Image 1: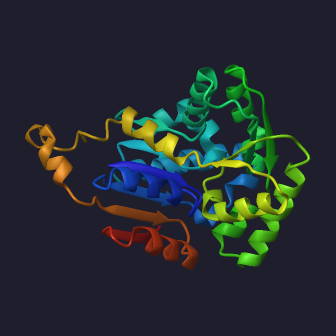
Image 2 (image 1 turned 180 degrees about the vertical axis):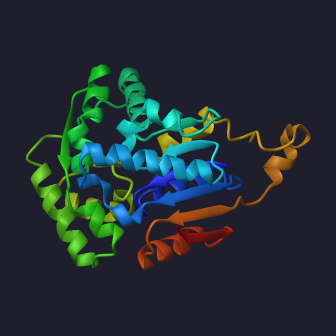
Length: 277
């Protein structure tokens, strides 16, 4: 079973891509709504929340972890996490797969546009994106949006969210860039608002959602095409490929009508449960 971790609904954008590619995967998802949003917390607070979130997923059957939160991606390689389980487990986070995909395009010459990272303050302050891109010889611009993830998480009115995006985009255009990376998993839910904001400013900007790169990385690293939980006879491929839809177990640290509604919108075709823990 794959475990997915986020501060709330943001990771659902990554889970959606995973289920589109691999609907038969069983998933346990932890949304730490009680402590959301993560993007405005200190690095020390995020370390503790990361360890707690991973522990919850492991105790609920996860054998590998996909961190669907950019703000905690820096901490997904902590040695402390290895002590949470007697069995070894793998981790895929948001940043490295995203940088790797763009680095490949950059080297091949397929994509050499100037890049702007839109993310939470915690993600920007960690400098992980900046440092990892720099290792690949790519300089990027960054722009932190402190209040957007929280507005999306707690169901603010469309007008309020649109105003937040408009202000951010307008200010960000003081710098020169041609590609925008939405490096908070909440942001793809309002991708249309980013598109409208760029259009209002007469700018043609390519907008990239890192979810696909991250999901592809998880499928490859965890060999999700052939789950180890199946018997050898079932791993021949036929039984696995013919399996329709895997189950989803949602765990949330605080109840949320916004979370429940988003789950219903995105995963109604799947068998799922939601438990407040």
